[in-house]
Image (tube, rainbow, N blue to C red; front, side, top):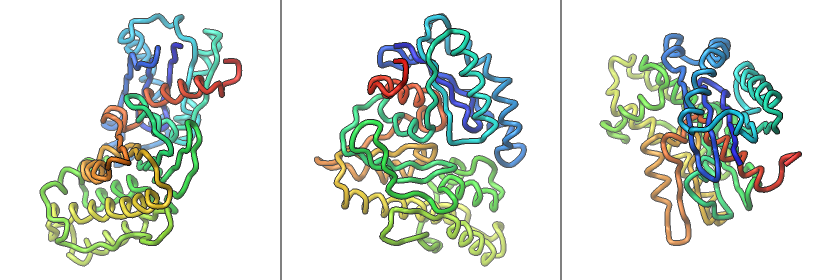
Length: 318
């Protein structure tokens, strides 16, 4: 099967081509430089840039994969969740291509795509626990078989990536905040300051709004960022985020006994979190994380999810 996948849920315009269980092309056009000028993602600007950038990523993907557009057999696209306008652009493009080529169209879930990013280079073992961390979502998802997603817990307010971005904005570090804080934290002492563990209970849910407020209070207590030891503050903040994610993850592992754990989503690129998750591996528990190129939003993960849907005969007309 030859699948053409489109990902336009936020600020990356991406297309991928999947054939015979391999990703032949995964082209990503990032909008970060444009949105950085505004201090964060501007939805209407994202939609316009998707329209502008799509022809270029389409041509590059076809050239990289060395196939003609008429060779495509399926069109897959991100249907939800994401920015409504950005998703709509992807949908219109997908429907137009599918109509022109007279091939089936597959609307898919962005979050499930992140999970199947781990299946691009790995085989899943079930039951599997997915730790999904991104700018808009923080979830623990249990899978007992392919395409079976049971949400154990999710964020009740801010997601972890969103919290990183907001704290970075308080410190005037720039956007996106996650990679910046991660880099600075590497030179700091994580016990120099104290921040409370947010929603530190026996549930699988998360809450990062209180941590954001605690960070703001600590900055104010130190009379502004000018008086903070920035590396120590970033290290403390990062350790707090990682600690609460790991506590909830370990609780789910204890109670559900998965054979595999995977860390997925944009924040899975965080160095401290990757290390902590990988340290969970034992002879009875395998841990996998997608390659960095598949961690942030990309169409390869949508293509891999589409392939699984087709293999499971879940798409009408297949």
